[in-house]
Length: 220
Image 1 (cartoon, rainbow, N blue to C red):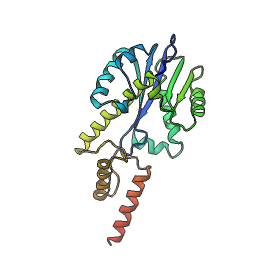
Image 2: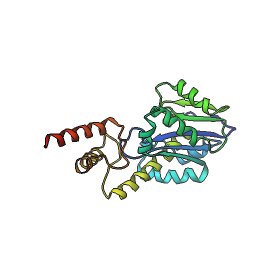
Image 3: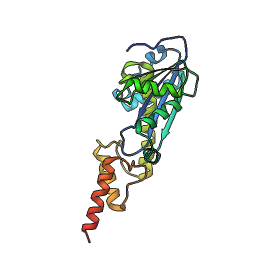
Image 4: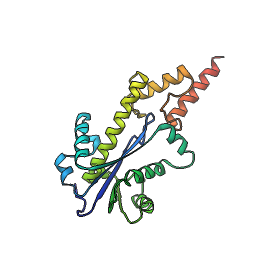
C-alpha cells in the first residue's frame, strides 16, 4: 500500500451499506498524522477481515486516532433520493464525517465512476483541503482501510440492533442475501407494506410490492 504524505493532519473516509436494501448507510472517517500507527495495527479493507478482527481493530483505531461517523437511516435515504442522487447523499456524509478536525488532505473511497468529478465536488464543499478520491482506496491507503473498518463495524452494530428489534434474523441487509430478501418478502405478504428500516425506493422492494398488490387483487 502506498503511504499518505506526512506532516499534516490527514483524513481517510469510506462507507458501509451503500447498496443495502435494509438498514442504514454508515460513513466512517479516521484522522491521523501518519499511517505508521495504522500499519502497525494491520488495517486492511474491512471486507477482507473477519467480524472479530474488525471489532478488535475498531477499538484499536479509536484508541490512537480521532474518528468521525455519519449515519443516514433508510427512511432518510428514501426522502433524500426524491431530490438528490445517492452519490450526493454520500458526498454530504463524507464531508460531515471529515469535518470533525481541520485537515490538509482527505483520502476518499470514491463512489462515483469519475474520480476527478467526485474529488472536485468534495473539494468544493471543503475549501482549502486537498481531496484524493480513488476507486478501491480502502485497498490502497491504510487511512482509508481504517475508515472502512469504522464504517463497517458501525453499520454491523446497527444491523444487530435491528435484529433484536425485529426478533428475527434479517441477514446482512443486502439484496444479495437471501435471508434479507425472504424477511422483507414475508413481511410484505403479512402486512401489505415493507418492514421498518427498508429502503422502499430500491427497485427490489418496488418489485416485491408490485407482486404483492397483484396477488392481493387476483385473490378477489
